[in-house]
Amino acid sequence: MDGMKGGRTSVLIIDDDPTHLRIYGWIVDAAGYEALPALVTADQIDYPAGQVDVVVMDYRLSGQLTAVMAAEETRKRYPHAPIIVLSDVYDLPADIEPYARAFVRKGEPAKLVATLGQMSKPATIPPGSAANDSSRRC
Image (cartoon, rainbow, N blue to C red; front, side, top):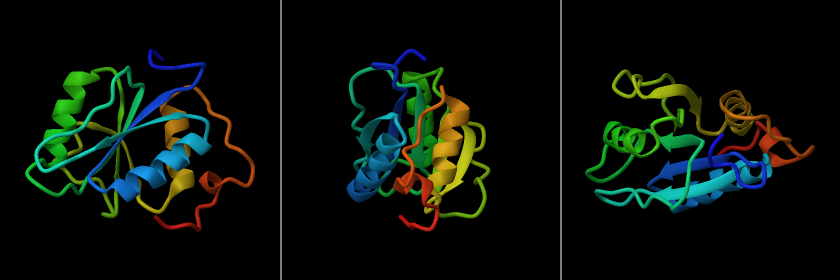
């Protein structure tokens, strides 16, 4: 994967909630990946510099930017990075389906880490980390 620094796969996390960015950044880092947070404001995404290997993005964004618009812009910037849609809805919404390689419900950190593993080189999950604890809710 192109964005690996020191062997770590880079994971772009797109969300409009700074708290969710921190939580999911922590889960991604704890699982051995490099977390790259990207805050969504009313009408833009604050992309970090550098290459991205995998994208994790929230489906429900506030403001003028929809998840589909965010996915389109992200796909243009990082055409080879698979997109994992993260949301509290029960099923992958049809409008985002053409952009999504996978769907994970919020509050399922172990599933998120497992899905990241399927999309990238294997990461080592520290035993006893929150990434292994599916009982935690975000």
